[in-house]
Length: 205
Length: 139
View 1: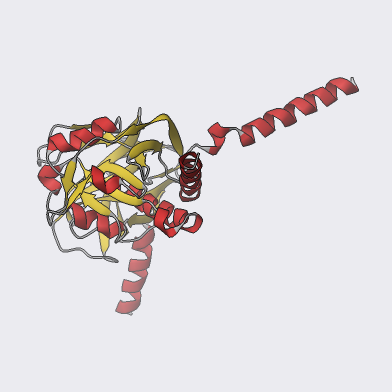
View 2 (view 1 turned 90 degrees about the vertical axis):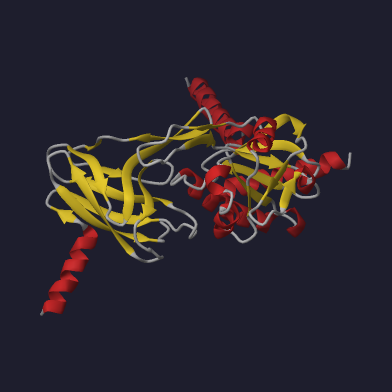
């Protein structure tokens, strides 16, 4: 009887240890791609006409977020959380490796002139861009993302449904991971720091 | 005396005590000046022994006010209109980012951080409860 009790205790301990240490549990804030994908050529811009292209993805870590300025809840919440997550990441990584947050409005019709100001409100280093719909679509496809314009209501307001995840692009311009809501600052920072360590180890092999 | 009464009135209105319905922690997170669509959050408590249903919100400072629920389905964020939000007897409903919120579209007046926006919550039984939501607050 005693040996059965011991076995049960051992099993419980083993299961608990597995749950606490499994990669699934450790990576709830992000999903690493099995195979990194190259982001193809694209050109977006801010209101001053400063371009943001695939070349700007090189030699830095970039977090790409899709949204629209008339989004009352999810977009401001995500941008606020990303600000906190990047601040946490900055504690863990070299200053050159602090990710650049790029907010891409999928609603250029309403946001073209204000997208930069909108993003900078959440952090002065955040970049806000938009562009021709076909150029936005290049990034949407490359990151396996999605958006859809909903019909306007009587007041002309329309919602744009969009992917909630944030794409993580490495300094080689490759899509390497996706961050998932709720973007807990500490866990997201841990995930990003781990991604950077993995990337460096692979780079020197 | 008048000042004292006004002070007391302001204090009580911020708690929005309307009999059995208590509304607290109402706030509107900050948005950039170019932002035109806001969200308000609050906690609605129903101390009565019957369910109460929120059926609409009025906000004089905005063109429109709607109760919405954000949902993420298969990785896609979308919003759904909430026509009737039931607050069960003796329970509370918390509006919060990423969940249920009051969407406020296009301010009709100049609003700035720390301004107080009056929201009127309309319930199915005809009761209207006013609450002051502070703009620019982060919970």
